Length: 253
Image (cartoon, rainbow, N blue to C red):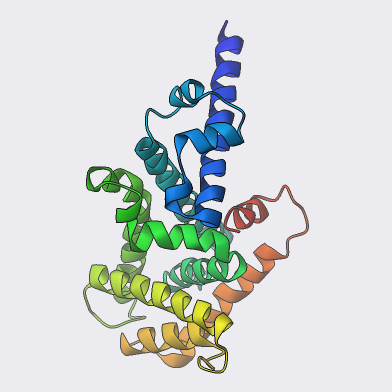
C-alpha cells in the first residue's frame, strides 16, 4: 500500500513538472497571453478537467511556475557555493569573500550560457507582477531572499576579517544583486549590438570596481576572483555526469 502511494505521488509530481515545463515553453515562445489551461491541456493530450486536478486556475499554475523557476536557480547557486565551501573547509586561507564571488560568477554564467532560461528568471526576479499576484510573491521569492541573506552574512564576515571596509551588509548585498542584474542586461545588449557595447570584461570590471569601492585591496580581490573563476571552470568541465557539481551546473542552464 505504501509503495502504491509513493508511486502515485511520484507520478503526480512528474505530471506536475511536465505541465509547468509546457507552460514555460509556451510562455517563452509565444508570450503570457498564449498560456491558457485549454492550450496546455491540448499540448499534453489531457482534458481540461484533468489539468484542473493539478492546478485549479491559470494563475495558480503561473505562480507554481514562478516558484519553480526561482527555487531551481537560487537553490542551485547556493548549493554550488556549498560545494566550494566544503572544498576549502580545511584550508587556512579560506575566505568568506570567495563564495560571494562564486555565487555572482555562477549567476552571470547562467545568464550567458542559457539566455532563454535567464529570460524566465529575469521576468520573475525583476518584474514578477505580470505573472504572480502580490499576495503570492513572498512565497515565490523566499528562496531568493534566503540566498541574499547568505550573501549578506558572507559580506559581514568579510568586513570582520578586514577584507572590505565597514558598511551596511544588507545594502551592499542589494547593490551587488542590482549590479549583477544590470550586467546581464548589458551583456544581452552586447550580443545584439557589439559595436555599441564594447566592454569585453563587463562582469569582472563592474564587480571589481564595486568591491574596491568597498575598501577591498585590488590585488587581494583579484586573487579571490580568480579562485572563484577557476572553481567554476573546474565544475563546468567535470566529465562525470553523476558528479554533484556537474548536475547542479546543468540545472542552471
